[in-house]
Structure formats: C-alpha cells, structure tokens
Length: 351
Image (tube, rainbow, N blue to C red; front, side):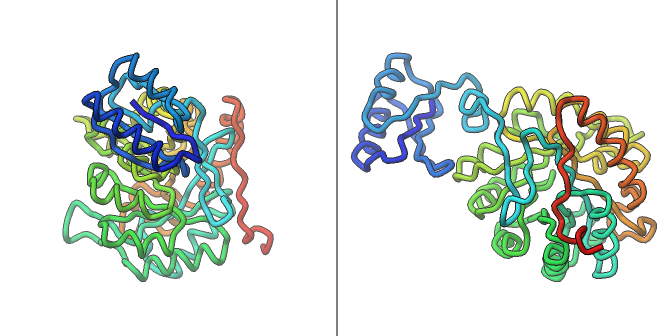
C-alpha cells in the first residue's frame, strides 16, 4: 500500500496515518517523492483499511499494489515519467522524443575527448557519456582517470553545452561526481549495491541505472525502487545485455526486457547496444531494433581511435559510423510515432 499525502498535510495528519497503519499491524516507511510526503507498506492491508485511510484528513490517494514494486509501478503512476537532464533540462528522456547519448567508454585524455565529443556533437547526440571511474573485471585493466577525468568531462560540457552522464562506483565518490556531471550512472556490477543506490538517489542528480548482467527484470526494478524511495524521481533504466552461454556476442541484448519494463514501470528505458553486443557491426542493427521495441533512447560507445582505446575499444563505433547510424535511426523512430531528439548543443552554432 502507498499512502500519498496532500502537499499541505500537517504534522498531526501525518502522525495520525502512521498510527492508523501501525494499529492495523502494518509497518509504514515514510518517504518523499516529487516533493510529496507518502507512506509505503510491505503489506496492502484490507480493502476496508484502504478506504478508511483514503478518507482520512490530509490524504490525497491510496494506491494498492499487487506486485513487489511500489513507487516504480504503473499502479502508482500510470503516465510515463520524463527525466530532464542538465541545468536547464537540455535533454529529456521519456515522452515523445527518442534520446541518444554517445561518447567514449572511458575518458583517456584531452585530445581524445575533444575529438570524440566533436564527432558525437556533429552526429546529433543530445548527451555526452564518458567514464572517469571504471570498475573493471581485472585489477590490471585501465581503471579510469578519476578526478582528472571528471574535470575533462566538465570541460567538454562547458565547451559544447551537452549534459554529461558518468559512472559512480562508491558512495564516497557520489558528491564529487555529482558536482562535475549532470547524471549519475550506476553500472551493471553495482546494480544491487544498495548503499551506493541510496547515496546516488540522495545526490539531487538524475540517475541512469543499468541492468545487472545476471539480474531479473524484477531485481532491476527493485533496484530502481531504492532510488525512488530516497525521493529521487529522475531515474532512467538501461538494458545493457545479460550473460548467456553464447560467446558470439559479449552479452545477449534482451529487447523483450525493454518492452516488459515499459509495461511494468513508468520510468524511461534506454538501451546500450555497445556493451550488450561488444561488436561494432551489431551496434546499428540493435539500435534500430531497440527503437522499434519501444525504447526511449540509446547510449552508444563512440571512439575516433578505437584501436588504441584504453577501455572497450573493440565495441566502439567511429564518428562516421555514428553519423550514419543517426541518419538511419530517424525514419525508424518516426515510424513508431516518436521524434529523434535534436541536439541543443551551443557548439553547433559555432561551427
């Protein structure tokens, strides 16, 4: 059960609802979402109790949910959530626009970032991606530039106007990453790092939550529930491929999960065709398929010197391939009733 309070509910009204729920054997957890106070219980209670609560002073509505999800569910919010990213909401994920995020898997240096950023801006990307902190399978692999990488991302944001999304890997780093970026990414290996989820949710930044490589759809949505329970409603889900027996691709892109997640939750869902396939020649067809399946956008690895990339160069596409993909994507997006979100980069006006 979710009890949504009115915006002007008094302290006495809040306390009354807590007491009422506890008297009936329920354990209410308080929270705030979109500036509105609410109480969430694990149990739904009886229909009679729901009616009594809904008619109590200060209560806006009561939502009785049937599954494990609460705040992420369509039962709680039927309309699609639109997540605005950037100081002035320059990028919008969800709604009629199909949003493309692009950039290198990892920040490697100023020259690389200048080159890749220019390429993705010219191709029409709406947001810039790039990893400053990289959790790698091997401790001997490139782990990212850390704070220096964040500074390079911030420099590109200032130069182009593109909002930046970058990964955060520990709760201790959330504050510094949030200062230099517009959106925090929770990677596949940290999808169920619950302390990190709480810290990211409390950062006052939108969060991009990648599905764990072995996670069920329910586990993915429940990880998002942690974020929403902190009061952060700006959450975007990302399908990035799940582990399977087939080694023909890096992972198996589960496009059925996109359609199912869109049915179950109001949150936007985007697709990562780069990490899921690990093959540059598959990025374009899987991007087109993702748009057809109802995804709200893409996050794509682009590198202008992939052979010498320090991280995941084997899956990156070139700037030219990205531009070609964007031109092929437009009619597909329009065929499913969406529009390709136009780049709002001020850089374009300067070239």
